[in-house]
Image (cartoon, rainbow, N blue to C red; front, top):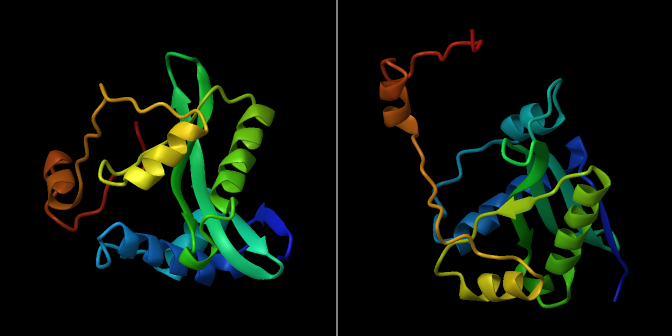
Length: 171
């Protein structure tokens, strides 16, 4: 078995990242939900103001998984944290410790950056993932619920007709 290497993603990894995102959406029963493009990922991950970071897990030179994350902020803790958006291991590579290695990598990064938290979401039907996360010490926060305003509802809340541009500043 080739050695596992976890490294920061580069712009050259964008096609693999998008492939993994699409595979994850298929696993999560939402295959048609991905509208992200390579251009979106290049702009937001590797542009002038990166909106996310990403690491790639490789066995030898073969991509085996990824973790895409960004900075969050806790007003109560008075500190930033790491918010994991997606962690994914390709099906052929599951059960080999790659997912745990990705989470361990992020935990080390969080500790090195002084972050008191590493957080993510999990679908309530995904019992294998929940069980795995609990074995590494993750706690499910059952008292919190995710709220989301998107698409037409977001436009309506903003007082804009659908498709109108959002303001560019917070002033």
